[in-house]
Image (cartoon, rainbow, N blue to C red; front, side, top):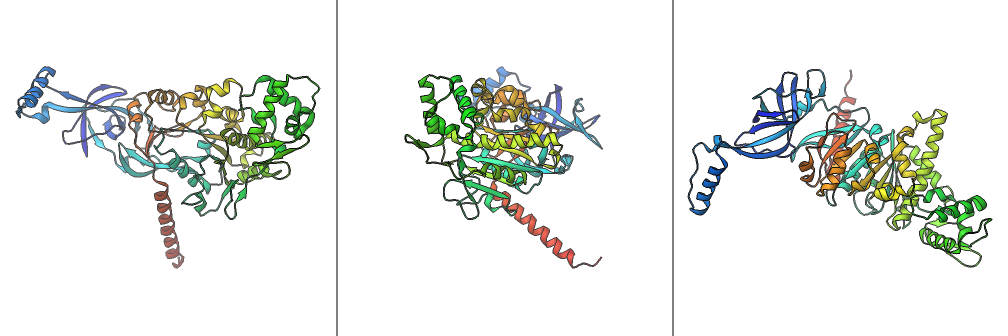
Length: 509
């Protein structure tokens, strides 16, 4: 279907006149011919234009409004029209697809995109399903995939305003990853929404490779979250804003009392170095709150998920499950934000330590990529936090890819994350974002040039996203299916595959 014609412009700002009976949308994908091949274009702005002067247009409008007349110049469709501003995405040649470096042919027709135009978006060896390709608001029913292992090892940023579909997207990504042997996810779930205790969720995945840890009545076959206090080391608390004297005190307590350093702080056991009483008192109070502890003159009592006796192997067990390509969901909905992050820090530190050893031994190629899913990511990789010192999450963001350990950071406020870390997140899934400062932070760190997509990002509706990745030819506009719809589609495809296998099993070749 012809939608317009190229009439002027320059590279990166191609101007096309829109056909009078056509309704173009921001983000719509189109094609046009060039000497180098077929050019894939995208609408990034729409403007009115007319061959009638602005003064005369205002006169006509005034007569229609004030005099209730129906006056207009003849051939209104020829004289008044819309112009679309387009950018080139890629040039499709007979045998390959390349970045565009030339303009479409002058006066070439711009046409509606078809599935045949995007067959170059092939399914990689280990595909991660993101959603269907979208043209404006139209779902093309053409699935979009990226290489899962590369995407997760090189970090993912998911950003968008509340209600735009981040949780649905993340549920879809986890569901699609569960069956893969090359990837594993550690999901810290502060809302207990992914597993699906009382609704459809990841527990319903046919592969049964989901491990669920919770502190409240675990379902049949799942596990109680209980962590031995000995597992906690001072470096696991690096994301918390302890003062320098408090950190020094923790270090000295750990050096003298080893695994029982927390108990030593709570019971105010002696150190070889004198500290201000207020320093120890504040440190003690904060540890009691963070770890949900109580004490008397001679003994410490555990009242939450931390224990003096149980849970000695739980961190090791979780890491082993992740190494076996299982998805581990930790329900942290009962805890404070800092306790949730402490749990994540314990597991992430152990995973990173193991994988560094595997790298030294030359065994890392046999291991799956492990990615940590973090909600409200600025809590641990935000500018203010990192100004006070690094932590395991920022270490993963900066160098984890070398050890096949990644980060999936979810946030509404990417501007709070340092630019150097944003730049290291090589796949960004951008949902609707109204605040200009947040859009700019994303645009400035994206893998593709999104400088003309400011309006498009602001106008993204629920379930619409733009994927900017080092592993795609261009920034991919996608439509995110509802989780329930995705499950139904998968079941239908599995049923059809099963029927085909049944038919062929009875055929003698």
